Length: 227
Image (cartoon, rainbow, N blue to C red; front, side, top):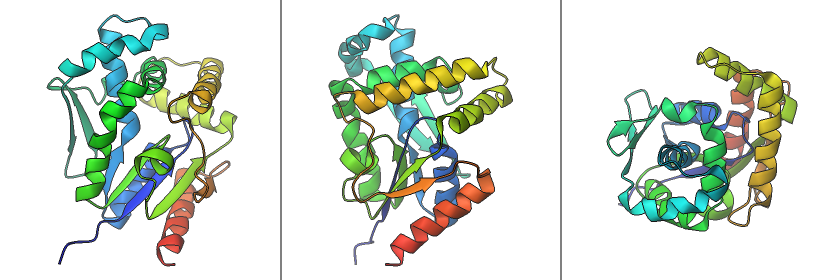
């Protein structure tokens, strides 16, 4: 008998904690975690390293043919991104790469290039996949769809602390400004804009710590899967 694979789509704005919460949820459920934001960050890093102008992100399209992108998962479930053989899992988390990820993700040819790569994971595994358009475009038939969010100030504070923990210099005001600008870009872009799917469950973690946020997300997902 063919094994049944389940898919959980988690969408939401930048800094909502999607990656951390989705990864921990995957560990609890025994699913494979796929961080699609890391995939776009890798393409953005490639564009940045290629010397392109941020406002001309579409110029990355001719470079896609020479882009060798690999995803690997360790025994701990952590996702590692490889760009032309180099592990760039840390490099893609630099603050300035966020703008590049947003820019290249607005290019239709880039989204088309990565679409099947993302869907292939769901065909062969039970997955939790997070991003901006998982429930609306990538996995519209997902078994569970969640829209994970928090107030902008809360998301900026979390991102600011995350950057400090990584040893990066950061200014809260700048982080908040960049986050609001990215919200605007992601929500208004022509290609697969950020929006809540009609059947997505809303999970707002404003005022909650990581443990409380995970408990709320787990209760929400398990409640839906039990239906």
